[in-house]
Image (tube, helix red, strand yellow):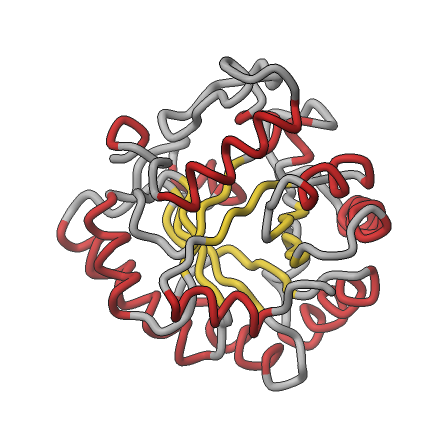
Length: 263
């Protein structure tokens, strides 16, 4: 039986940690969920780790649909979340809905959209029409050129207040989850306390409801830059499945992320 949004909300309410990883194909989908991963994120990070691009910007909607279909075919239990790629939601709410609907038809249970308060009207439009949305704040990989690089967000008082305000507005707009990337752990903890929905951290400390990493990063097989928040779980594992199981166990017990993985 597949994990649903309601399942994850109940886990959050009970204080049970949620383990998530990116996934892009059927074989890994089966392996990950059998190792106990609760949520599979079909991430536009596939642009980096599969396609060899320097950023996620070249990834297309067709790419995301294809990889979503692959993951769904290999999965029967895990919750499936899918990134909306660059240019597919920075448009009218109506056009965003049509793009999101194609991802839902491919098997997504929720779509993920980067951006804060500026996205609230679009998110309200989607959620009112039956499309569950996870918002993404903090470091926004699709806005890397505007941000001036992959930098920690929310360090100043004004930035922190804006992120908290964005989080509250996004929840009011109807998001079912909130992903926070590369922000101070204390800020992520404060935002998580203020919200009633699950929060997902990637470089956001240990107090989020869920943790996610890029699969190729945590297996140590991506040759690109390794962010501080990444841990190589293959280093002490005898197999990929053991590494994934170790990751799940550390997330569930709160051992990962540790202090050295936070900002």
